[in-house]
Length: 130
Image (cartoon, rainbow, N blue to C red):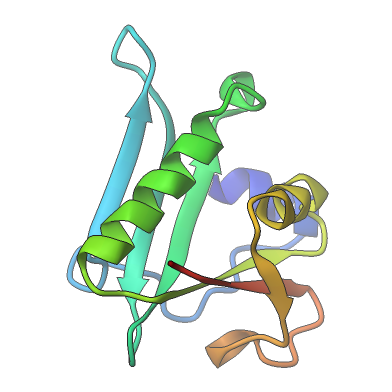
């Protein structure tokens, strides 16, 4: 994941406070029928009933197979179980497939949050859970 992003943006990961096992509340791994990991995603609780979706990633050979959708929906379900009503996330301008994916899944573009406010390479989204 990190090497793919570094190649797209021609720079190393710029995240100043990456999530850790202590800060995330959920980390999901999708596996194929042989048990090989095909994707992942996490929830990082923020405040006031909001959580950030972090580390959404699907390996190239599994893209377009529904893995990302299943991970995203599972993260949404986990958020609801924890009383989280709003999800936020950030992706980047050089990830058009991710942007289309989140828009297709009903996420709305936002002006950003936290370290992404005013960041020109970031594309931020929010989603109200029902």
